[in-house]
Length: 199
Image 1 (cartoon, rainbow, N blue to C red):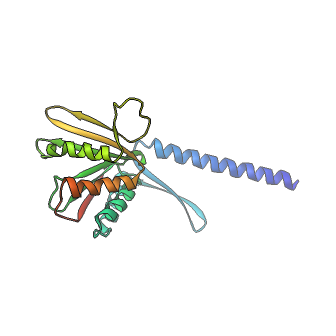
Image 2 (image 1 turned 90 degrees about the vertical axis):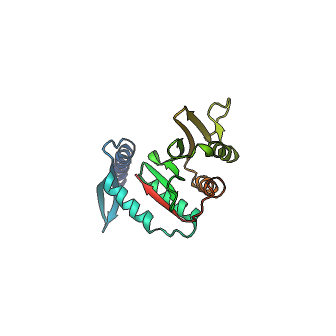
Image 3 (image 1 turned 180 degrees about the vertical axis):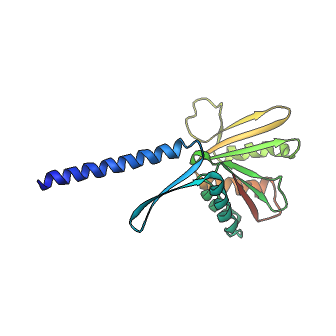
């Protein structure tokens, strides 16, 4: 009789675990209203909270604003980590040099770098340096035959703009090193401190 009860309890526990995992996965990937759902135990009870995307972004922005900004690489690392928790993108720019920005799309909890240059922001002159740095970092152009890795970049350009997109997946270390090199060697930023904005 004890074995039957034990088996029944194990089946119930497995069912609950599987159902909660399925619901969380569903909400995590199919959340069209951009609600941020969190699960946790408070005083031994399961607590489920729902936060609107705007409130979530405000909370993340406040966390980023409180981060120490003495070490640029560490600031980028911490801000990217915060943004990956549910923001759509993050933009870094040096204080006083708003047009020298580095931006990453962070949706789906992955990093996708985007360089966008047009006549207004005067970043076209950095296009070759950016693609060169991507190549030095191990990225290959999307049209390279027989390449099966994740480090790819693609270029979209016309008379109005140039856009370069590179897939960093979840490699925060690579994204931090890449961003630091952009600020040091390509933009030659005078300010060591950055501003980070999330959306």
